[in-house]
Length: 221
Image 1 (cartoon, one colour):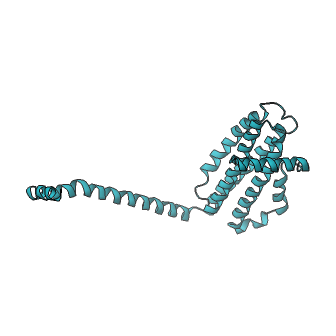
Image 2: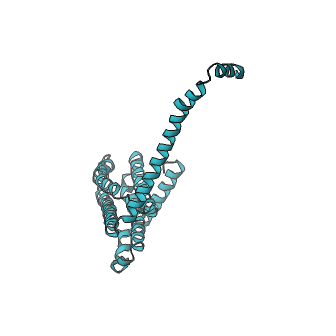
Image 3: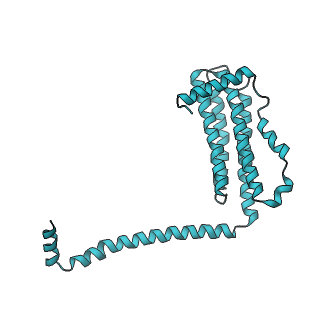
């Protein structure tokens, strides 16, 4: 094989130049161009962030926080929809459809305003979304099991996790903007954890914890 290649190259001395200029050179140029393009994008983003005014970034934070707060309100409405009358075979699915329709608008607003948020803030937002996803999975599982009376219990405890995430996000935004600390009301912030009213009775809480443990064992969650 090596002898064949050597024979070809000996009889075609210009072949190496053709290969270098016709194949490897364009590939090298393409690699350098892509690398430079990526570097330029990173530089542009860093410069854009550097010269973005604090007011502009603060406005994006406010829009994101407002949208997340709206989602928590939608969770509260979901709890109301599933309280006291969730006894038929369609109540959970119908309530989830209305919930998704309302929340989808908030998702778009959040996505449009995440560019200049810190990585810590983005991670907390994903944590919030993960709790929303788990809530929907639990409700869908309850629907399959025909455990309709447990639907509002699931929403209640999920709302507390969502409120905790929202409080973390608010704390982070405030810590990054020292001039806003005077506007901070810790008591009012903690009230978000009780957006879905009073805690369910002990027997429902115990049943909820048992159901959740079963879902985890069955890899539903």
